[in-house]
Image (cartoon, rainbow, N blue to C red; front, side, top):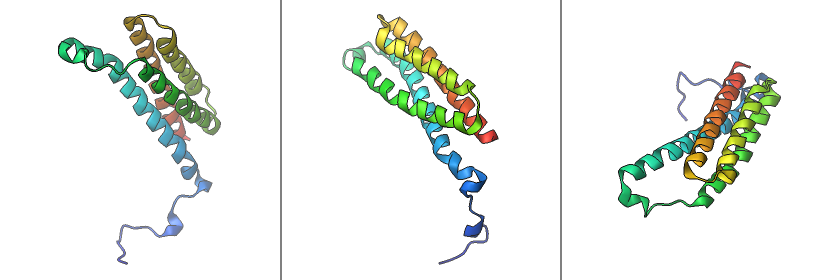
Length: 144
């Protein structure tokens, strides 16, 4: 096997002792949850605009109410896992509390809001808070 000059020997690989390996799963979960929150915001804001611009598609494309419940069911455990692990790692409460507030707003939008505007406002506010919590969690994890 060929050896390249910029490769480091295995002895210099990061280990759990310096904390880099233990951060990887949580950083990955924060990244996944951040992407999901961003996609949620794009969905909530972009889909109605698309439907307004292209009325012919509005009657054919409807993800239904179960879509929001499925997304919430994925967001809650993923986000809570990443934020709780971040709390354990860096000791800060702010990302966890902001994330819980965001998940609560998203839950209100998906489960309680009656009209489309209210659902969109609650859900977008929650997903923005949740995305901010994951960014804060991620930054605090990197700073540690």
